[in-house]
Length: 550
Ligand code: F6P
Image 1 (tube, rainbow, N blue to C red):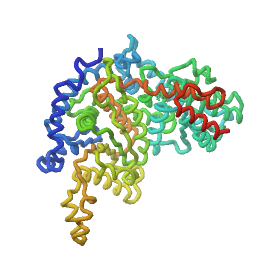
Image 2: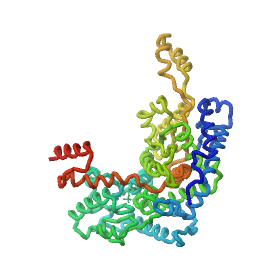
Image 3: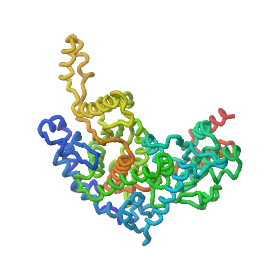
Image 4: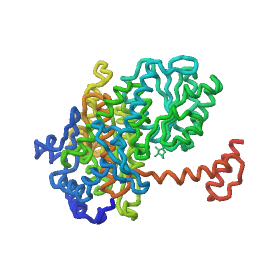
């Protein structure tokens, strides 16, 4: 139903792009800028106060047209409509993919199996509003009547990375006396470090797990529950624990009253769930009004994605550029660098979004794909990362396409900090594009008074090949609305890539094997079983670690 008629790497557009890539390998962005004064304008798209300048990419009109043709041949437009219509485009799990319904601000019905999903979504949104208001106003208190001001989110993967990233991104909007914490890792240190900081009387735990079977989350939640019960007794659980899940039965089994449960649905993937009650901590921290503004921002991007023509469609263009380098230049990575301290968890969030969605090797028509799918996504906050991996981005043997994310105004305009920050990001992108030839490096060294020998010795080391691509994503300020736009932009970009690669971006079967094996190893490590079913390395490691832990 969803597979392509012809493998995408055999399509006309793909072949054309292979041909164009050969030509583009010899073309310098520098000269394309020199020849075309309209280039920046031509290859920029704006939406609201957001501007995406993709002019510093190795493209020209022919390449751009071929990329757009690839999207057409892959049937992207049709699949977008299928997603918005609630069709079961997650074919392996036979599920609809409706994170867009969570922020369907027009409230138009969306049907799954003949049933409109909007009334349920609106009911839970109402519940999020009531509960977050009650916690913030001190109407929902802890067991001893104190306000709940320490909010601890227990979850992992999509039940952690999204809410954690968004909560941090919107820190300036937090209620003054509310503090947020996140426990995700099974490493006891994660739990211990948070529990050392909070007071049971004022702490609310939100246990987030779509399945409510994830070992890390349940183990952490049990530890926190014990800690609370030790301090305040069993009845305190009802006042200090809520759950967000699709699995009412398991929530009840865990000992959380289903009345304290916020539902979501199997048509929302974990890594696409921060718009649901998984974002409860965001709503408590910044207030429901701001949470709604974030949904509004995502909705604006959804509408843009659904209606803008492909050449002016931000997620579509970003996806095509990513495919351009990944599949036609053999570049296997992509860096995301927000120049905003509050966005520092965005790269970690995007790692799951992109790599869990598109790190796949089986196509929708049940074949092993013959081309590269997801790149490795990495990144960190600028300018910190300029002093870590940027050496490689500038002078490494392979280019690393970068997304630079840039708020024109900081929430903390102190002296000239933000102007220095902005100057840096603009300089990075210009330097990556222009580079510095060996001759230019030599001339600079000479002008600095270096001897002839020194110039000859250093000129290559001081040169930069340039022609390295970057996208500039600029907006006014990181507020709830803009954050919503930004995250939805990346969700849709990831979706388009998956459609073109003809893979299911909405399952994550690749995480299962390791989980299964860990369950087998656990009793062996604990010394209850002999390790007999492993390779020699794993067996020896189990025995060595057991020895160390004696
Ligand atoms: O890593 C696998 C995964 O299933 C992710 O997709 C998900 O976000 C995470 O585990 C947590 O799952 P859950 O919300 O069901 O606890």
